[in-house]
Length: 406
Image 1 (cartoon, rainbow, N blue to C red):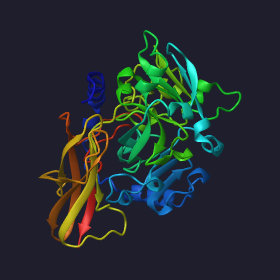
Image 2: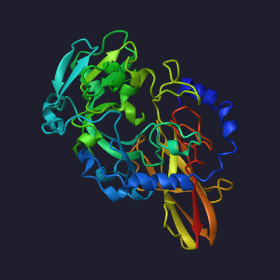
Image 3: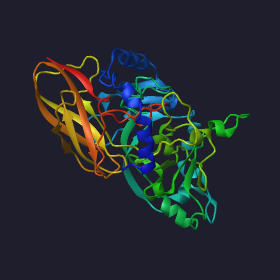
């Protein structure tokens, strides 16, 4: 369930915004312009640090932004690493930092016994595996009619993976607990800061509320293997239910602080600013993910042909901070809905669920949509919440597909 302050902010942002966008809400998400954007980005080569990925399954927007194609999610719950999206706010460090993962050192501050601990030492404190959705805050940005600045993600800046590491609570116990008055857990990334620049202008340092530490971990493995550089190795802060930017890569400092980080990425970036307004620290920070779903098959990609008759509509759904409870599917643009069936195992409240709905389709044009409901009772909304940077888009209408059956 959304925190009350976030709910209020989303409601305020919606005021005036939804009405202004009402005339564009029915536009087909896979427009000709979007298809052209995909074709353009698809031609770019994978960067060296991600050269091991499956190029045909990905859309390379830039060296630091790589998206999974809608058709490439497949029918498995866990997203293969070679298909998992990549998002870096700053160019990643040297590959040398993952050559000896156990030697990476984390500084722990804002605790009763501050200390530096290597990954090898952290491994002695405990072990837990967390299946979870990892999703960029801007996933779905391409569907905003205002075309906010930033990567024009459609659905592919997300994946479901299993992170393995030590619980934050176990680390805290090992250092005597946090200092009095702490309100935030603040993680600082290990990206290199060019000389002469104010670190706060470029440093990746994110602060999140202390309640987020209950299920948070320091992870050194993803899907059973050491975390590669592309995904934040050798050590990454993992906060289940929170958007990707809060899961700090190459974490080199973990602090428990009274105030949020002074870094620009905390103070001004990733804020829910109204359309046309600049972000500022008084606006709600982008932390928790909302309930969301989308259809993966059919994919709506150019060249796809659907034959009339029985069609299995497949997709993915998650509840954000709670499990996905149910999913409905529509083939007529949301006029009528049928209940879908979950398939595959339930990996816990932070992971997504696969769903399927069998429908009979005659030749013609269809608008296929999915709508999820979380265990907390939150229903995926029809409309997006307008905001200046295109964050947290979980509109089922935006993610709807236009398909032709022959």
